[in-house]
Length: 337
Ligand SMILES: [Zn+2]
Ligand SMILES: [Zn+2]
Image (cartoon, rainbow, N blue to C red):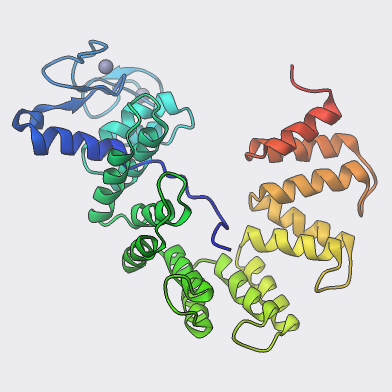
């Protein structure tokens, strides 16, 4: 249940590295700056790698180069331009802005920089620096950084699993206001690995998380009712909470309700209601719902078979990150060029 969503471990590492390597260890490093064209940490008046003069930036609005704080062609502010650039899906384009913002101590940028460090992309792979980027961002009060550290120790993908440390970091994130961290804390009480199982406490955490804006947490409450954890099994109440989660905007709940109605599990089988929930899930960005809609149109489940419609849902699911959807899309359309 703790794998409900994947938090990109991306952002914090580079900034921390710059700061620890530069400021802490070498006194002269206070003079370092990040080249806004290539992302190299430089000293002096021009980038040591690409030669760009210190402070020159490319406007994300119109593409022109500037030195002052406002674009002379379109009027976009440098800060706004850097923010846009840092969010670019293209990792190469985003990198200089991410590293520069991280260098100035921005929590979100530190977290993104951590991703470059963990991947070893455009910068040498360095897990220690990645972790320090997250630490620094957390110290600066950026809750998602502690959440990311919780995930690192919880999942054990980058280093050995350490659920005790994971719980500590989730607690820190919760203290900084992360509703998702409250949900994670609830799972520890539900599972009883680090602390003694206490379904009452688990439900308290889930409810707190849900009421402070994490709709997926209603699902965990539903699950406790469906499984009879710490209470009598109560499928009607479970279903009520699944619907509550879906209405609060949980794409996971919409997808799950779609599945329940298609299968006739907990509810009488009803393909058209199932497809309705899948559509809601897809609207909220759930890639599994998109895939399920493709499948329904391909095999005529609750709808007339329509291969063009199926291909279009598979394509959406692939664009949302599902490799199996790309395979299914290729199967219908004849494949990649
Ligand atoms: Zn450069
Ligand atoms: Zn401009």
